[in-house]
Length: 400
Image 1 (cartoon, rainbow, N blue to C red):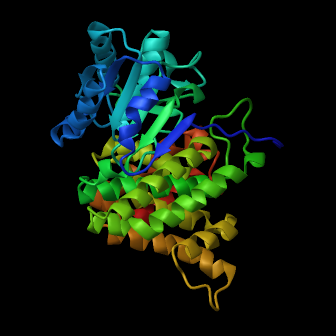
Image 2: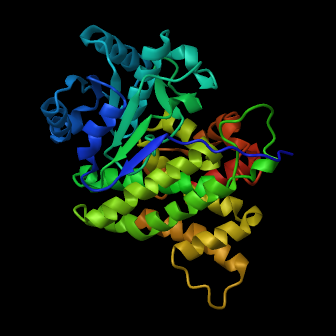
């Protein structure tokens, strides 16, 4: 049984409408002159990258731009991006601009700049030997929380796997969050990223208590702990109140701002507490279908919540209250059971699939999905109800 917990986060967070104007001040503090910007073609096409590049050039910075980031970047893209950076200039600071994939790519490049080698050298937990190159993360989606997390995910195309590099040294030096940059996000992307933020928050909040996590040594994902609980619960409230509005009214800046804040708080929570079965199940499913990660975790979340309710009754009841369920005349058990239903209704309301069959999963895939899920120990040990092959297959059948 563990008696102490630790909490890690990004050193500096700058949040607010128009906060992108703070970039010069931030870079001055980092004593940076040569900037390497990592982004994707969509952000470039939307004019967001040019806005940032203009700000930097007007302030007298030298800027090299790599704008070929792709969702779940392959290992080869990370190597190409690092080579591109090396061939252009001596970089003082890196900016990751975009969704989680652009920020993850920037993290890996910052790691390779500081320590050299190949991305494969760092796969797994606690493999980064020291601080990475100065990195500023500027998210343009409200979902992954990558701007404050200790994880970067790459795709191993050869083996059809997603591989993570997980280390507290990977956290960006600065997270710069400007809600105005998220206003142009299409409804579907808003829905997928927003429900991912909710999955992070719910799984961090309902994770097994840190004292009872059965694993040796220093853990990156430590289970539920008081500070993560407070952040995760606030994130649940923010997403419950604002996600439908952000999807339906993309120009509603208040809803956008609340979603970005929810995503940030969820990122701070889950990067310490960890996620659990919904995320573990999403990995093998993600290998079988082409659905975005957020769509898959969001689809699974209510089924996993229902599965966990019997051992996490008090917290599930609080989640139901965060969703506005009227407690009058209800027992704690009834409230707890309502939580998964509320999340199910939210997934429906934002137009995302609620059944695995809708995204291409077949009944014969279920045993293999369950088997592979049980192998993802760092997430499965976090789940409040201990899963096994039979109970996971049952859960998946309900979701099919």
